[in-house]
Length: 510
RNA sequence: GCCAAGGUGGCAGAGUCCGGUCUAACGCAGCGGCCUGCAGAGCCGCCCAUCGCCGGUUCAAAUCCGGCCCUUGGCUCCA
Image 1 (cartoon, chains in turn orange, cyan):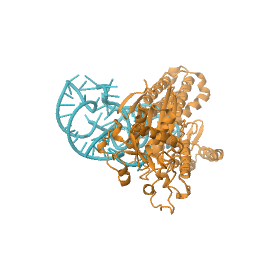
Image 2 (image 1 turned 60 degrees about the horizontal axis):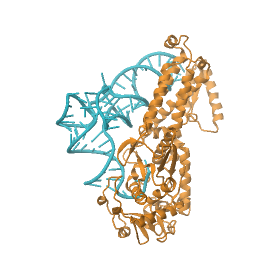
Image 3 (image 1 turned 120 degrees about the vertical axis):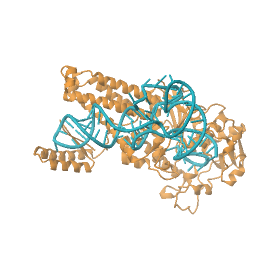
Image 4 (image 1 turned 180 degrees about the vertical axis):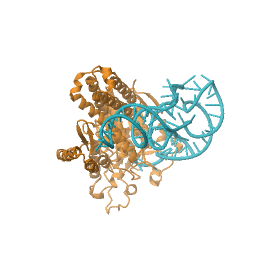
């Protein structure tokens, strides 16, 4: 089954066919770097990451562009705040650093390019000039606006009608526009103090000498690029006039993506994006999570608290295009899911390294579980990148592996009858199961079973200390002092160390 | 008000495009059993939904059509 994706423009799910059968051009609307990234961003990133991974898995070369908006009033509003730096540039640099660090922490594969607006002003100007030349845009008091009435398809993505779009509050800006829905491609002068003030954090006083941010030379005088034009300019600069997939948050559909389509298609005269994919948002108990509401958890804190694997499992526990509820319970469930996968993976590896594996008894049930899991996972990801179903397929594989291992392990009656001599693991079957976990769980979902929750450094000492305690507990058990043994176990658990008695000795994890 | 998305078990969440196999998936929680000194992990089994409401089409609807109610998001910076 071939890959199908849901396109916001048509509202339909349809087969994915890139322009070039070997290459996929992917653009993702990145962040305005005015705050540390939060979990909502992480959710979109992880899904885009999985999309890129899956497209690679299908054999496409993926050219993936993800921009940084580093010229914006919101950034200017942070100048001087908490030692962030004395210029728009410095603030942006700080948050770009934070963002890249958060991305690494989430085990995201790097995009091909991370372009910045400040480095693409010439392309922005060139695009605006083209739009003016084609009569889609007009200059007014040093600013340039896009004339929405000139672009026939305006509103096709968001189903908005031009008449329904309300006028903006800014009286000056409205006076400069021909139509209230017209939007700025270029804004004259520096960042306006008024606009900057609306983006300042609560309780933060305006600096004595307010900054206007960076200004750039243009044919219309000094000014700053509008928010929407930058994505068109950068997308075209790195991917050409028509891209295959454009991804972004659902909250960007209008006006941002609508305007991108208008500008790009008006300028190029051809289709801008073949497929528009929109990632849905997080929901807290009552409202969405967003920068503007300030009710977010930063990526950094979430990674610290839950770890990359649990976080990625949580974030891919729903389809990208459905809203997800953020709660402690949901995180706990994700933790259970990840651990179940990880345990099965490690059990398989331990078994394959053990002597029983050499007996090479083929277990048809295991083989079937592997084939089913592979087929189900593939079908799930091909169905609009359905990561939740993908997880389910892997979870089912974990069950298959566990069943096989439980049987071979003890040499149950049933296994004895079936295999003649009973004991023995299906070496090749386990090998294939491990490969499936690695290929899909690690390669596509971006999990890391090898880590298994451990943090580098100090592990050796911790291990030694834990083993010391375990020795003591073992002696207590041998002496029948179970109260003491259980107390040690409880205390270890309080420290975050779970132990587990098995036939071969005591295992632990933390 | 306008434009979207959605209302399925205790939670979470598939299935709705292409009606029947949905007596409704996977997972979490809960219960029972195996294993275990106990616990945990694992395995086996079980409990819990007639699918927002009303009406229609059909031999047959969670799935199609109409109306209504409710929730969320967008319409303003936002992944």
